[in-house]
Amino acid sequence: MNTYTIINQQNWKRAQHCAVFRNSVEPAFCVTFELDITNFKNKVKEQNLSFTMAMIFAVSKCANEIEEFRYRFLDGEVVLFDHIDTAFTYMNNETELFKVVNVPLLNTMSEYVELALTTAKEQKEYFTGPLGNDIFQFSPMPWISYTHISHTNSGKKDNATPLFDWGKYFTRDGKIMMPFSVQVHHSFVDGLHVGKLADKLQTYLNEF
Image 1 (cartoon, rainbow, N blue to C red):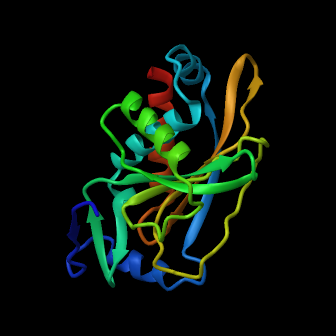
Image 2: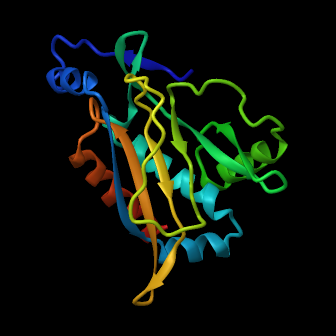
């Protein structure tokens, strides 16, 4: 597990908001918006990188830079992780069933993509155990270009792991666009922070 700091909720500015949403029937919310991936897709292709793994790296890098995406509940406490790693679904084309693969977030995209592909291909099990708190979860859906998405609910209100998805990209007005979804726990993340991620990620994709 990555290192973390236990938050003193007596003087934490978000304590009241956290408590209100933590007790909600459904404390998570999901937002879908479009990303312009024109530059990113072309540059990733030029570098012969997996688009999916490169996108996981890009999202994780940007989300790690926003504090609110690194808060979690742990043993009843609120904690802030210093660094968040990744877990993603990977399709077994023979069985058409997915497996969940855990991969640490490395410093460079090329290193991460190589490790992620190797780990995914070599893993035999569909599930290797419960996911840790210190991950971002990814479940791309490249078969359809959706405008809305919802997710299964484990019933665990303290599950604050952000979940990222994207759908099939398409061309509009000469640009390659892609639906992208962010599901977060409202105890820690508001619409403002999702907006910050959207801006930060779009800038990263444009400048890659």
